[in-house]
Length: 257
Image (cartoon, rainbow, N blue to C red; front, side, top):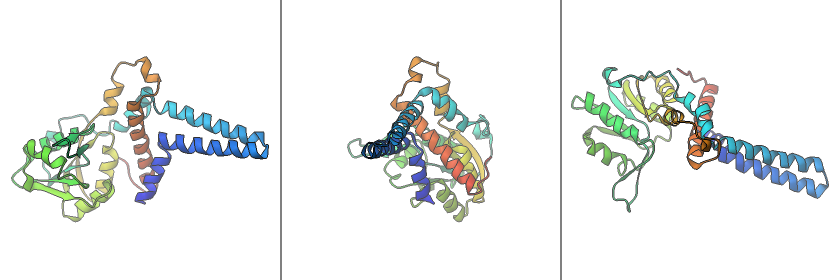
């Protein structure tokens, strides 16, 4: 199911639709030209035109306001999460971090706010042995140095390098005996992440951060928002991927909150 979700997510992404649509349209045009069937050629041309139009729409800043902002929703109140109470662990999902030998230190990408917020939560509630969990390969070279710089005790870090996605991480954390967590992730990812952790039997105190969709939507609307841009394409690709993931988990019987 992991690879199926990845494939479906790519197919329905802006770049995936553009590539497959243009490739399919070109094949239809070629077949129509060889067989002399104008209807097939016209269908191919129409398919290419539709895909280019969709790509334009999904590459515009205006679209972020329509499909990105609803992801961050209102189901997680915008309150000071330090008032939500204690827990067994702070769970940091992802972190938008990387590492490279030329840099000499961790690289912080767009969702690195997660790391700062996870450290803030741990420092506010640590009682000497409060765990802070991490997943994915390479976090020792990227995320861990920043967490240590922010004051987190390395002895309290718990790693789940085998987890390939949020669902697997939730299951592994539940299997470790952790039952109540402060879940730190981007606001657009929080509803699905919370649902997956609760399905695994974990009580979740949500700590959303990285409100990129709302931030972009709150900027004044400009003429450039009606034209494709790399930044908007990235944000809208994230939004499409998240909507597809929510739908897939809904088909599997997931319960949204």
